[in-house]
Length: 375
Image (cartoon, rainbow, N blue to C red; front, side, top):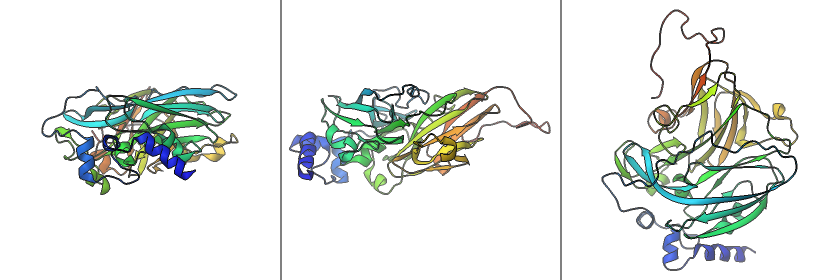
């Protein structure tokens, strides 16, 4: 079985001649840093590259509705691989690899016991082979072998979602750390059979590192730096692919209403760094470590309560809920704070409503305060 599976993988990758170069590897051996950088990134330096995508940062509010069905069903899901050039921040371009042109990739949302027919479509203009490994799958490579596809081809598999929770999916070709860092990860949410408790608003975010050959903020086109990745020394650490993507400085903040219960899904693509996920000015009133969810419906007994900072390892997820009793700007950060102040990681949530000075009085002695933090 192992031999036939390995042969299928090599055949899907097209490991011979030019196809080996496209795949960026031969067999199970990782290519050298020099070979990979030459084969898989443009030979540009100096000025910014021309972009072919306005942005890669996924809208945190764009996620599927909660499960509202009570018996197993089958879902047909297609993930399109898009290799695009976009800005990390204004004046700084980078060659991303994405599922459906966004980071994180689209959330796949199903119910425990559902069947998923998943197709990976590797678009013909791409340069490399890709696949998808879903941590919600019983099967070789989480489906990576079955879905491996060269540019201009597609592959499919079918699986049953047998255990509940929030799980990462990611590209898993031999250069998987490069592909994940460049944007190829997302979340599959398998709701327990009774569903999730109702909330007022849900948000979906993905954290990862970018390793480039220029300094943070240096204008121009940043090529991927494999040595920096091996040393785990990122140029940027970001939410949703771009510096401060969903903060006021870029596309945000996200707005919610006072009194809303807000559920936040975070997937940590890594490939190397854990997140220390903290809502400044708030707390995770209920939090589910590593995306784990109860099968027996006892959410209150299963969740951690009033957690200030949730550790999320690379290749894992978390689900956290916040109460919003006062108007404020909540800053979602990695509390390894140099990543916020210097590497680009920040999202903001504005709670819109009326002051409640019993809970929080920002002007208790008539003093005024101006200036946001971390901007």
